Image 1 (tube, helix red, strand yellow):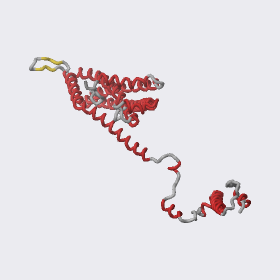
Image 2 (cartoon, one colour):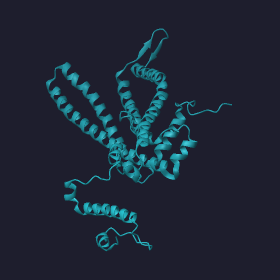
Image 3 (cartoon, one colour):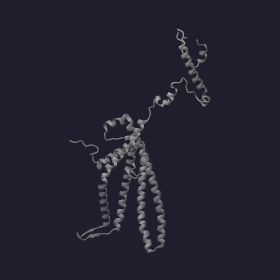
Image 4 (tube, helix red, strand yellow):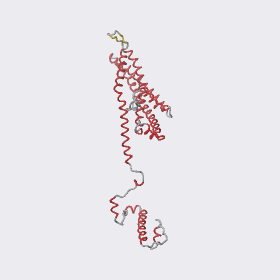
Length: 335
């Protein structure tokens, strides 16, 4: 029996999708930040309901406004014009605050969820064990922030789990509100070939249109689920490759790499000469102590080599002078 891999499993299983989404989303609503998140969620839901109510009032305003134009009633026209002013102003205020609080909730949720997954990934060497056990997980360090953003806010900032949940609730409320309006406006339709009378035929026509449109969208967009998943994986692999190459090309942090070395031309220039490069006048002016110490040490080394070659060294071992007492030792040394 063939083992079913991650690539073979269907990605559009609605039941499993909802279960996995709730498993990921649930910890935040019961975390330390739950009260702030719940408060923002309630405020966003209330503002969305307010937007639906304003849309219903705008729909009724359209009827009264265009009836006043048809009847050429100037008084009702001015009344409806002022009514539209405060309806439009209210809609703008509510929509702006809904967007502001929605994005604030997204930021808090993304920050908490990203921190949670980073700690889980780094805890106990999980990042190393995942490479050996979880073969279907590739480059989680490059995908945590991006996947959390897509899960909560979606690609455009209006989708994701939060956008789908609030948008679905708003769509249901809008459907219920406008179905009542459409039911009262539409009349009955008699189908001549079957002799069936359909009450409020516009409601059923709109419902049939929505069902067919949803089915076509699912049929066309189903392959995009796997394509979108592969796109995220390949982009994560691409972001990982340059960072890996940059890490491999960095020099070692040992002192041998960080210490400057003389070039081959400089070494060949001073190889056959007893002279050594002297510091510049600027260096001797700015660091006279270091220059004198370096010059004194080089002179002492030349004198010590000549003294040993002359055979004037005594049988007893003469200790090598310390650099700080070199001047006094040189005056008292034999030979």
